[in-house]
Structure formats: structure tokens, C-alpha cells
Image: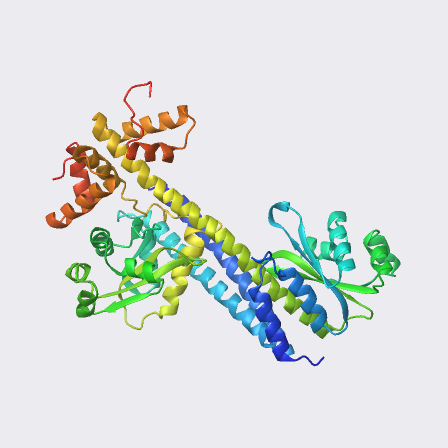
Length: 243
Length: 283
């Protein structure tokens, strides 16, 4: 299949630059991938993209036409169809004909609906990054897709997956950095508050810490916040069991 | 991981972490192999680009595995001797081909929050940077780029306060690489007296990334670096104590402790212990 390299390069840039939910409400990565797949893979009549949301709160779905999008959305609820199989096992779904009795038996709800919509055959490729399957790219066609077309489909899926993975890692990284910084800062605040209490009450730092912790526990508060208030002079702790 | 834990179990933890990192490196290399063979078959550059990303990921995991393995070996050997407890950062210095290395974690205001050093010289260098609030870590974390200075003259010209102290320790070269995650800077890896040409900057970059990605933030993070991370607990306690004694805000009290340490030629830790022993009074 002759493929204009420039077009492919443009698609790569477009995919790399789009996220799952782009700010400003433009087309997200699933939409871009579905639309571009049909443009680039000549024999492909429609394409659908499913991205499993992390934490199990639904699947993000996009397709090259609205009917396929609705079908893909329903398939996610049914937990059946090529996209679901691909995601569950992390391996490609090879060419399947919707008219094949075995296929109809395997996807009892999905296959008849796909046939009604005029689709003949289907294959799916996983969106894989760093050994995780993030979603699937489903390719519809009239005739069996050749190896080269499927390999190109996998490449597009790979680029999309790397982009999605990076977006997820950025989010995770920011959370982890925040947690690390919070823990380190808390430690500084707690030590400072310990030193203040120790000096004020003429006790050892360990005893000052026990005082802080006791106050935090009995008032159901976070130790860091108690320390902060001690440092800012908003909270005066006295020695003895009542504090 | 506390200082008191038995060396065999600490070594076992390090081996387990190394195995995890090796497995992640293997998977990334495998993915790169697949993409390279796809590139060869199809002639499409896109596969080479994906492969390059995967190779880079593999290199970072591999660096992480090697650091854990080096530490595991050191720990296993140490259990049979009376030497000081091995430090994770010693292996980092070695891997980077440097005399000493230190890892500094900073807050949003670029203040040092924790530090791990490979030896006395790097510990002292970090201490001067903490006291003087000037030096390669501050520059690297501020500009987000690696900072280099080679030779006493360059060091002293670049950092008028910190430079002479660093060269006074007998260190004549320094490189600081920022530790970044998704554009956020959490600190820096500083190498002192890197051997010229021993290891490329790429290696140090990989190691800095390995420290960030897998040692500090990865799936099984250990920011305490097996008990080698110093949070300067007593210095912060002393700042609190002196603030009560002097009526000054705690940040000002900390600045006074740093100043006193510099004038007396002591570490902030040593000054802090005196402050704590003397009801918050500065020595």
C-alpha cells in the first residue's frame, strides 16, 4: 500500500499532541485516532476507539461515524465485542466475519448489530504502553485487511497509546511529587513545632512530640495542621494529660 | 527502611527492587525490538521513534537496577565487616564516575528539605549550600538545566560565597543535574570531582532520571535511600526552640542558626544540638 509519509508524520504529530480530554473541548485523542485511521487505512470502512478509564469509571469511546460510536458504547456495557476482547487479553483480535456462526455465537449482541449497520469484517489492535493495555482500536472492513494495513493500524495504536500513557504518567507524577513534597514539608513543620514546645515547656523533644500527637488524636486532627498552628502561635499546648 | 534493620534483609529488598527494575527494562527493550523490526519491514520512521523512546525507558530502568544491585552487594559484604554502614549514594557516585555524590530534595521555594550524601566531603558541600543558600543545587533547580563548573577559579567565580568553601574541601569540579518529574523539579543530583571522560553526561542524566523515577517516585519508592537520607530534624527542632527563646519567627531563627554555624565553622547540626541543650540559646 502506497502511503504518503508526510501524511503519516502529520498524524503522528497530531496524535502525540492530543490528550484524552483536551482543554477547550476540541477532539480528544480517541476521536483523532478513529478519524485518521479511516483516512490512512484505505480498506478500512470504519474505526472505533475505546479507552478504558482508570479506576473503572466508564470507557471513553470514539468512532469514525455516530452509529459505530453508539455500538462501541453499548459493547462496553455488554462487555463483548472485538474492543472488549482485545482489552481483556491485551492481544490483537484477528480478522472475524460477522456472518460467521462462531463469531455470532461469541458476540451474540455485538455481531448482529454490526451486521445490521452494514459491516462485514472486523479486527482489533490493542493500545499498549509499558505492558499495560489502555484501550483498543477496532477496524471494520468489507474484505479481509492485509498484513501491512493491520501493521499500520497497530502503529497508529502504539503512537496513541504512548501519548495516552504519557498523559497518565504526567498526572500520576504530579500526584506523587505533591505527596513527596507534602511529606517532607510536614516533617520540617513537626520538628519545628517539637522544638518550640520543648523550649516552652522545658521538656525533651520526644515528650513534645507525644504532646503534639496526643492533641492531634484527641481532637481528630492531622499532626501537620496542629504543628502549623503551634508554629504560627494560634495554638498553645500545655504539658500534662489534659492537652 | 530504618538504620537498625538487618543487612541481609536490606540486601534482599535491594535485590528485589533490582529484579523489578530489570524486568521493566527487559519489557521496554522487547518493545523497542518489535518496533525496530517493524521499521525494517515497513521502512516507516515512526517505528524508529517509538523504539528510541522505549530504549530510553529501558536505559533508565537498567540504571535503577544497577544502583540497587550495587547497594545489595555492598550491604551483603558489609554484614561480615565492621566498617560504617554502606550508603546508597556511594554507589551513585561510583556509577557516575565521580569522587562523591549527593542527592538534595527541595521544596517549592527551593529550600533544601532533605539530603543524602555519599561521604563527608559531599555532606560538607551540601551543608555549605544549605547555610549560604547558594550553589549548584540552587542553580540547577532554578534553571531546570544541568550546571557545571570545573576548576577552582571557575567555581569561585560562579559562587562567590559557596565556591571558596567548596574548593576549601579539596573539591575542584561539580556537576548538578535537576531531578524532574513532568516538568516539576523535586531536587538535584550533585556530583563532586567527576572523573574527566570517565562517564558521559548521558549516564549521569540516566542515573538522575532513574533516581527520580524509580527510587523516589516509582512503584516501590524509597526516598529515605535505605536510611541514608538526612532531614536535619534537630536543626529544625533547634529553629523552633530558638524562635521561642528569641521571639523571632521560626524562619528567622533558622537563618540565625545557619549564620552561627558559618561563623563558628561548625555544622548546623552541631549548633542545633547546642541550642537544644541550652534551652534555645544560640552558642
